[in-house]
Image (cartoon, rainbow, N blue to C red; front, side, top):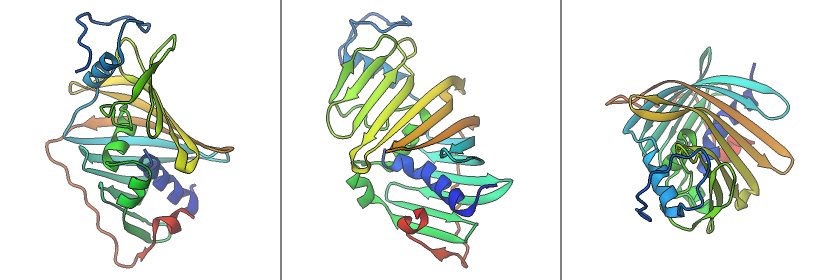
Length: 264
């Protein structure tokens, strides 16, 4: 069973990992399994945006496996999202163990192991990491979109025999590996200089639900020095309801902590 400290780090890491993270009009349709040398960066971006998941409300169940190189732990998550505004996560191991509510200005979190909670503004932390919209960045990480704003410009193409590879040439270093036939994102890599760390996210087994295409599996690898943490996400029960609630009531007997204290 997951111990107290590992459980807290796992739930927060799954959240905070993300917190750090019509162009050229060609007429011909690109359906090759291999990259074309003739397509411009702007056309790759245009086709990639067409394949992105669009929604107002999202609800999902997630099976999560966490491996820090020493042990493997599993937990189930219930995830809800209001596009670009709120993300709510409830974690369970047979019984509920923790909840997170993330907005673009604040993170609220509580865990039942040691009865602690945080309720903290995050705008300064996000600004230091160059992230303007934490919810959108986290949402994109989970759903097969670029963590960085793909519309911001500064992308250049890197030759690759199997994918269209776009690399950011300004700010946070990021590389996108895009399937040349579907234009789905197969992998993205983000280097965070402030933390001297690399995040690699692999997406696989895309499926269509209610006319929306989503990855069924996401593998997040976090590398810093000799330390490697892997988080494997397996999605199920996707739906897109018209209305959602985001309940977050902190028990009165819980002790307040800061992010730094929780992660120690």
